[in-house]
Length: 401
Image 1 (spheres, one colour):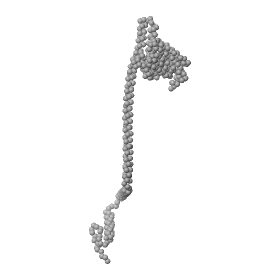
Image 2 (image 1 turned 90 degrees about the vertical axis):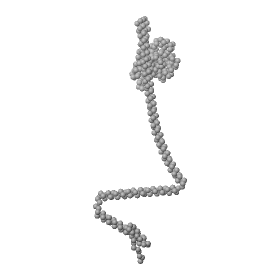
Image 3 (image 1 turned 180 degrees about the horizontal axis):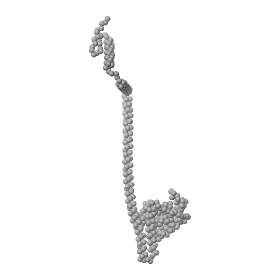
Image 4 (image 1 turned 180 degrees about the vertical axis):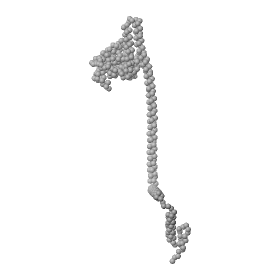
């Protein structure tokens, strides 16, 4: 038999030597001894814990169970993270191996492609930001331009309002001066005629005629002022009846014949047969003719001529056109556009009238309804025209409109 040496066990280690030829056998014995020692220790600890500790309560058992679950969950998450990390590492390693397997030109092409994509993304972001900035700038510019335009418009309106106010004040002052002048003249004539009657009553007829003429001028001026007020408030009323326009023309010419003769002007009526009656307010048509003929007398020099006539016009002959022509000085083209406005004068410094006659004539004619206009040449004279309807239906249609 082979004799083995007695085993020598060193404290603090699990390695034993029986000889040169039996290391494996000794390792097996060492493991068995260690396991037996651990089992004895566990049994001893358990017995000690059973003797010394109290039984665990239900709440402690639940807490311990929850702690075990949490620990297990943490371990699962840790395992997942470790697996994911390993997977990423494997993928990166595979990519690196694939990249190493490509040629240098392919790797450069891939880098260039990545760089191109990055630049495109960056350029698009810059483009979007610039577009946003441009929109914001344009919005601000539009706001400031609108504000500037609004301020400019307000300033323009203020200036225009100021100019209108100044013009109104100037016109009012001129209007009062003209009215005072036109009322003073006939009053002076009446006063002088009355004085002559008191001193030398031999020319009674001529003096009475002068008083009548001056009184008529005053009445016409006052009527004009009242008519302007009626027109402004919309209270101008007309009384329509059928009339012979030729008779109205003759009467108007007769009433102003003396005034024309006193200036050496020939005034005549040349009405044509219109074969019908006009539907109008006779007194208002007389007023229109008086204003037109009176203006012609004012602006026609001595030895001049004034002619009043009429004729039938219109597509179906449904209107009568009345004209008052003179051989006066004529009207400048720029004045023709405003001659029918209130307080309009042919000459800026002209004081022969208050500038209401043509305005009133225009309002009267348009109320019938009709039209009024003027044709003139400087140095040759002027002709004023206005129309009146021949049938009453035209008036009803105009009122309905």
